[in-house]
Length: 290
Ligand SMILES: NC(=O)c1ccc[n+]([C@@H]2O[C@H](COP(=O)([O-])OP(=O)(O)OC[C@H]3O[C@@H](n4cnc5c(N)ncnc54)[C@H](OP(=O)(O)O)[C@@H]3O)[C@@H](O)[C@H]2O)c1
Image (cartoon, rainbow, N blue to C red; front, side, top):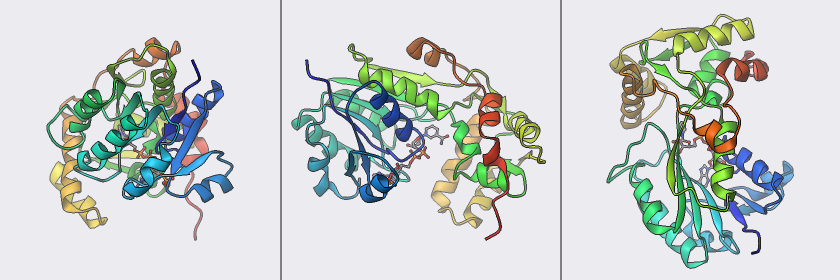
C-alpha cells in the first residue's frame, strides 16, 4: 500500500510543529497547514499549505491527496462544531480515513463546546484517536500567561490552590500523536496523556526558581479574583470565567493523576517537569527591554 499523506494542522504551534517533524522523520509525507505558508517556507518549513479554519473555500485544496489528519481545532472558538463538521465531511469525501484530534483532559464528552468534537470525529471518520493531554509544560516557556509571569515579576497567579497537575511536555503529546497517525492498526481510542508526576503550581514555581536562579513563586487567589485579573488583562469575561473554572477543577483534584499512556504508546517514559525546565532554562530569562 502507498504511504499515506498526513495533513498537520497547527503545524507552527506547540504540538503540531513536533508532529510534523516526527511524522517526516519516519519517512511519511506530511503537509504543514498554516495561515501563512510563505512565512513558514521562509522559516524553512517545506510543503506548507494554506489553511485557515475561517476560510472554508480553501479547505478542499489543502486536503488534496491527504489520507490522515492531525487536527488542532480553532483556538478561542467556544462552539467549534459548526466550523469542523463541514471540514471533516469534505475531508472524508476526498479520501481521508484517519483523524487524530487534539483535545484536552479538562474537556469531557459533551453535546456542545469542545467536548462535542470527540463524538463528531468518532462518527465521521473510520479511524480515529482523541488525545486528551493534561496541561502543557510549554505554558511555562512560550506565549502563555504563566510564561509571561515568570519572565516578568516571577509571580504565577492561579486559582488552583494546592491542586496538582500532571504537566506534560508537548513533545510527548506529539510522540503519542505520531503513533496514532502512523501505526498500521488505528488506535480508535481516547488517550489521556500526562507527565510522570503531578505537581502543584507552588512546586512547579520552586523548580523554575531553582533552575533559572530567579525568584519565582505561586500566588494563590480565589476564582473570582482570578476572573477579575484576567478581565483586566483584556480577556473577554466569558472566557475569563471558563479559565477560572478550569483552575477550580484543578483545585478540586481533576488533574491530580498520572497515566502510562506515553510509555505504553511510544515505548519511552514522559519527560519530568524538572528535566523540561533544565532543557528550557533560557526561556525563563526576563524579556529584553524594548
Ligand atoms: N496549553 C495547554 O495547557 C493545553 C492543555 C490541553 C489541551 N490543550 C489544547 O491544545 C490546543 C492547542 O493549544 P496551543 O495553545 O498549544 O496552541 P498551538 O497549537 O500553539 O496553536 C497555534 C497554532 O494554531 C494555528 N492557528 C491559529 N488560528 C488558526 C486558524 N484560524 N486557522 C488555522 N490554524 C490556526 C496556528 O497556525 P498559523 O499561525 O501558522 O496559521 C498555530 O500553528 C488547544 O485546542 C487547547 O485546548 C492545551
